[in-house]
Length: 243
Image (cartoon, rainbow, N blue to C red; front, top):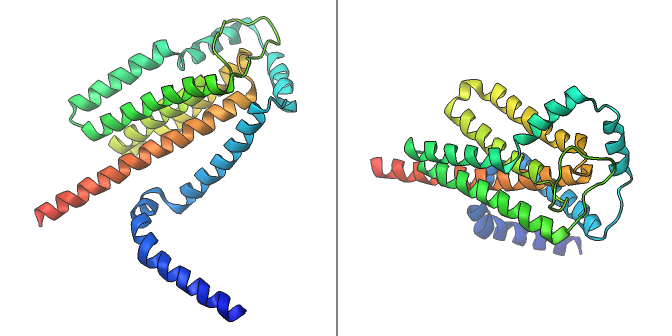
């Protein structure tokens, strides 16, 4: 029996090396095994979370976290948080997106511009579509400073900030690699601050923010991977022409 299993394993391995691996090798090289594993893990966690949301199962920590955050509210912090949350609003996000796209196109970064547009547009579609699909009510635990009329899950601010500012950080770090660390640190700080602002204002449950971040990251990762893959193909084609 062991000999049979070894023969089957060897046959499967040969087929993998001959037929499958050559096709996926460029993708794995572009993505990296670590980030591929991270995405698989996040996808699994997202599936579990979303399934519970669909089943209308309550999360014990959702209400507890919101009430804990609410105890720190004060007029000064209210104004700061209202300013931060504006960075995820369509009135700010749309002009930033259009400005960046026009600048990339004008500077002849056409491939980056196309994938940036795909990233932003896809993020908006995912946010709107998933909100309708899950139809989760927003929290109503105290009188709120702002009024939101859309559904709660996933958080559009969390998803949108991850998609927009994450891609911007990637582009800026590509153009200015010397400042890679401060660029990513600034983007991460802004994305986290926007998510926390939604909890402070009481317009989202913590699970909404988590779901928005995970969905946004997976979409951002997909767009950046496709962009890098296309760039590598273009570089290979240029090298072949030069030879």
